[in-house]
Image 1 (cartoon, rainbow, N blue to C red):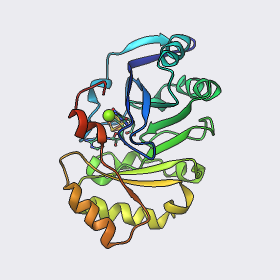
Image 2: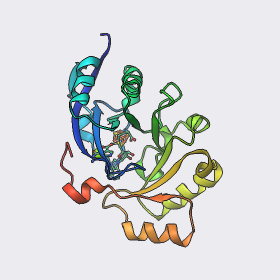
Image 3: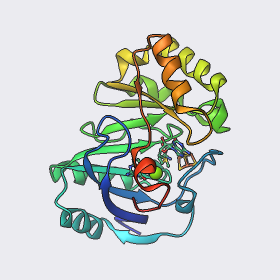
Length: 215
Ligand SMILES: C[S@@+](CC[C@H](N)C(=O)[O-])C[C@H]1O[C@@H](n2cnc3c(N)ncnc32)[C@H](O)[C@@H]1O
Ligand SMILES: Nc1nc2[nH]cc(C(=O)O)c2c(=O)[nH]1
Ligand code: SF4
Ligand SMILES: [Mg+2]
């Protein structure tokens, strides 16, 4: 089918993460993911969804009159039509971000998109899926995220930060606690103790609305 995507939900909320945290944002959640991170808070997007035309998605997004649009999932890049969706969203004048697992090639995405590339830690149980070739495509418009499940994950993330010079390559490096799996205040303390050039982030939407889908 041409120009269609399988979509779990489109909703307007406050961005809970990344460098635009706190800003009203439309979320477009694409259905399906080839990974199975043990902590995944969006497993309801693995299956189901509705096949929709690009035009109908663009129309629904426009109805919210947003400045920011976040394409997430599931794994957006697992659907080939994610690329024209991202491009059309940029053409329409929105500030667009893409949440991606980093398991698929990011190089075909519109360069206006801020790609939030999650480097999967060992604690996710999907770190063998990391596509390290993506790192050479990162620009200062992009963000790298580590979702940290333990002190071991933290040490691993620090080693990748140094090995790939991520703080120079990307505009932001984000360290986020895996929800309820590591103490957020411990993670904050480790970052300060090590004087790391990274941004600590919490999932604001979980503080505000617990774990309700569509928020
Ligand atoms: C649900 S994923 C969808 C996009 C893509 N599949 C990915 O993993 O980046 C969006 C972001 O939520 C993060 N995430 C999922 N479950 C989480 C949890 N329990 N605690 C913290 N972050 C979580 C993921 O690591 C990812 O950075
Ligand atoms: N409010 C809110 N912010 C988010 N930022 C990234 C999300 C995601 O599920 O990818 C998300 C989400 O699900 N809700
Ligand atoms: S890659 Fe993203 S959507 Fe897929 S299982 Fe991991 S966190 Fe969930
Ligand atoms: Mg979420």
